[in-house]
Length: 469
Image (tube, rainbow, N blue to C red; front, side, top):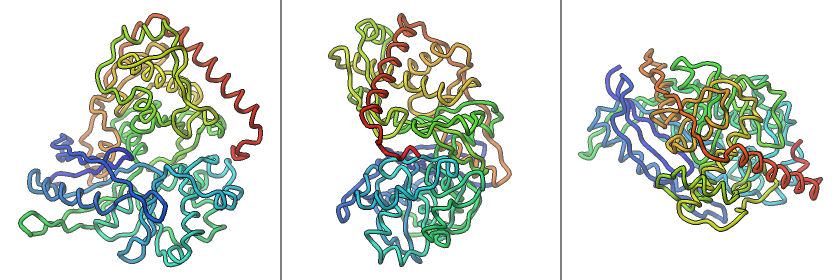
């Protein structure tokens, strides 16, 4: 292979460009934030603004680093309705609930958990609900739809014109995919959507060519690889570096925990436990909560170091952040709040990092994690977070990624694999356990309070979302 590879890693909060040399060296990175706007009363992506940024940056790195290839990694829960070369409706923001009339129609016909291993989920966390929303309220748009494209494949289409699908995204808690059958779900058949999903191509496969306009008006051809779901790209990366028998804690806006050793029968549909699908089409037992978003909310956006002393002061004072601060997760029934006293500044950030550690630790128990623990992504940069996990889970070896961009590097690894290259090696490093005074007792009390609040909320609303079906 000659030339470098550009990877666009498109998250809900941040959109990033990474440039990798053929031997796996990170040459460059650039960032922006996606813009969400109103369209007919719905929150949608400003895709033209984002596409403009992508083209501008791609043209620059094509000159600066000799980029000749392009790969996409993207967050879940988004899709596009297209016809020919036209986007028929802007891409919906998954953080909005469907109207009650739409919910009453779609929710009772969602497939059983045993088929899709996806429970009822709020907002657009299952994209089937949002697809049905547009079918119901924009019937002319939907009837004219030639293809339903998952989010990474939307960008593949924008760059090279190919309409494709891909396993890891179709199977990402979408209600569209039956993992054990390796086929579309009964819902897709019932609603007559199958013909609107294009052919499936593996993540990383070379699928087309983009023509990128340079600053001087000339154009360059850039090979385009089929895109991938971000957390599944991270999982693929660590497997491709030779790791096996591990649990991945992939962190960003979401904390996605994947343990391939967890039996499917252990998944609790009422606690946001699901089966994702790997890039090879295998079921991937998973649990997720919006840990990065919750950390930012609880900490008031703190971005400085947090001392062990601040954590110990918070523990001694008995201050707890209780779940949940965002939709979904293992405690969907309860509303997030801080109890035990007022905190600000570093101490509030200490409460936030304790919260994410408590949630992660509990989630690891729920998903039966007893193997090697790999922590990746933004929260892996918080030393106290990984060190507290190591203290809380002394029977597990815990390692963290040193590059903290598992989804982007995984996307690069998949593209390189399609070319017969394997430039990446295991770069994880062991985590040393912290020694925080009172941490075990704090965990016991946090769990008692959190589970007690959940039990009370469930008792008060026994019929809430029959939906945990």
